Amino acid sequence: MNKKELENWRSQFVPPKDKQSLRYAPFCFTEQGVTMISCILNSEMAIAVNIQVIRIFTKDERNASNAQRHFTTVAKDRKEANKS
Image (tube, rainbow, N blue to C red):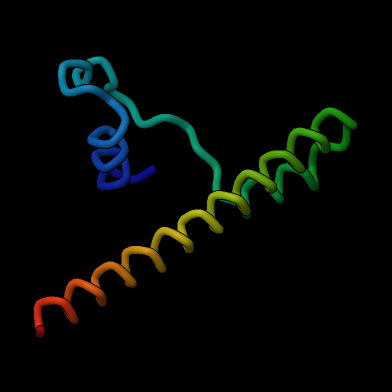
């Protein structure tokens, strides 16, 4: 997580009074990183956990895509309403 991502994350999920308590960026993985780990770790538990993580990444991407379409539609509707 880079500095900009950390600040964005803090602003969304950490109450302002608690910003001082989070001094370091949390560890996080990309979807590609999780896939690489699943190639290395070969236990049944590791494989099951990695499958769940990949499913969560996929669901999150789908939700983000749906949200983007929604915001685009709302912006278009507002623009058309302002023309009238």
